[in-house]
Image (cartoon, rainbow, N blue to C red; front, side):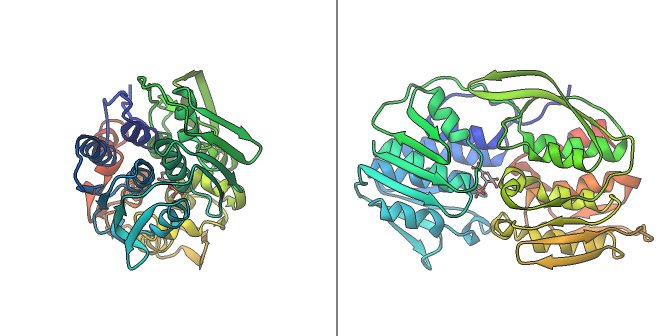
Length: 393
Ligand code: S3P
């Protein structure tokens, strides 16, 4: 059986809420968030928490801490320190928090003592589960009521965990209504394996014509649009042993493909549902027939790297014959036969998903690549290289 890491999004939410969970295979982001949450809960001083590379850890913990009214400083590595934090500081400040950022936009995040409003309405203009969750956690720790309008749906793990722990949270159409005054119960959360990690191995199966089953993978409907993309590309996807534990659905997933992969077009509301899989879709597109287009994905420029620009520059190195059109919010990839088999160096800028997407691409025709920073995959998938070697190389 392939041992995948536990879901990174769910695990970090558990870490912040102080909920115990299965920790068999966890990456650096979960470890940083666990450590920071523990340090915060054990200190009465204004301390500095280091969130490493974890955007989810930093954004969610900021909301959680701001709601407690206590003071704290949150910092991160170079990549995290260049990602926008005003998207959480601004709504938290309008809720009554006192948060200052470097250059009004970046970490370190300096949280001063404050007391949040008891009742707050907020519209998510950026479709981001991190912003939504930050605000929900602020409402929880400040025991406030909050109503969040979500224009485009994003992953709903926070809502599910809160519901699982007995919180007063409901969803009515595109509104989330949460009353943080009701205390939540602490319980063990059984976390499925991470769909976004599984996605690399599903792609590996397709490129190497294997049909290895991935077990107990999280199949939350707000996370699995990538399966639908694989089907549109011509793959057959099957889900078996479907069940639900700790309010999160899971299943065993198998994919195979009897034809050549086809190009796809992805835009609009679907984007947040597969945002972390887009670099992988980009590398799969190199082996498809026809054009692949991604639009409405400007958020990719604010991830661990500018994933649009870095993906495309590496694709150009991987196969210089590929035709690429870059847009502010996406790209077109028009594949061509790769005439060159000379080794290429992949530049990751420390971005785990760029490293893993190109490692998977290299399985096709056993292309030789060098990843400039292999260690960065530890962020989310510590046993990635071990699994590739054992099952696919
Ligand atoms: C995450 C939400 C997404 C995703 C990130 C994890 C989460 O980010 O890209 O990897 O755990 O809530 P945004 O909410 O900023 O889009």
